[in-house]
Amino acid sequence: MCNIDKSKEELLVELDRLREENAALIASNINDINNFRIAEEKLQEEQLFSIALLDQIPGIFYLYTYPEFKLIRWNNQYELLLGYESKDMTDHYILDWQVPLAKDSILNTAKKVIAEGQGSIEAQLLAKNGTLIPFLLTGVRFERSGQVYLMGIGSDVSERKKTEEVLLANEERFRSILNASPDDITIADMQGQILMVSQAGSKIFGFDNVDDGIGRNVVEFIIPEERELAMYNVSKRAQGIITGPSEYHGLKADGRIIDIEVNTEFIRNSHSDGSYYQRYF
Image 1 (tube, helix red, strand yellow):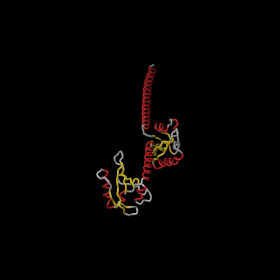
Image 2 (tube, one colour):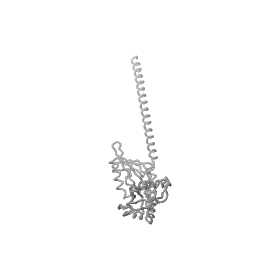
Image 3 (cartoon, one colour):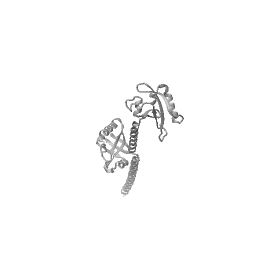
Image 4 (cartoon, helix red, strand yellow):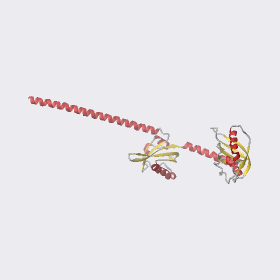
């Protein structure tokens, strides 16, 4: 009877020990599960932060696999600017957004990014509605876990292109008026670099065509002894200190010296710099 009671007592002790071990094991498992859940929640928070960060980029973000050049990551701006839904974006080939004439240059630039580490190109992307949107596309080579990617940002340059077109149209209009003028007119920036010359102006200095003087300095067509005086007079005229014409000895393209009389006027812009034009007689 005594042995039986002892066996029961030992059995109860063993059961208590097993309960304690199981309780510790369960507690450990619960703790592991909680730690896993915390880590998972932290990872989700980081992913949401990354997505929110990409969506705040003032342009389109893209991540392409290499060598397939398949789109796997993008931001909300990509969808908004090109008019696509999220379901339409996955696995798009890098040339799917391009018009036929631009595909070779885009693909060559993408390969250059992978080979050299970075690159950029201006190109028009094809929106879902058929509209062409001009972008400045930049890219860098990105590698993770042995996989190579092309990652980049595209900036919509539509407004800049419109401004350039307006400026070009205005310049062409002004050039047409300039070339039709019977006056000998030269337009230069404030450093004296020639920007435009009328046809009559090109003839007085012996240019074969109106573009021969572009980029050269106006003082090159004045004898060396009077160049410093000429630039001094221009600066004083800009300040309104000197008015009226100035006389110099000019140099033709063939080196011949001629007498010239110069009237200088200034073309101001919103920044108060700009350029000036001169009339030669």
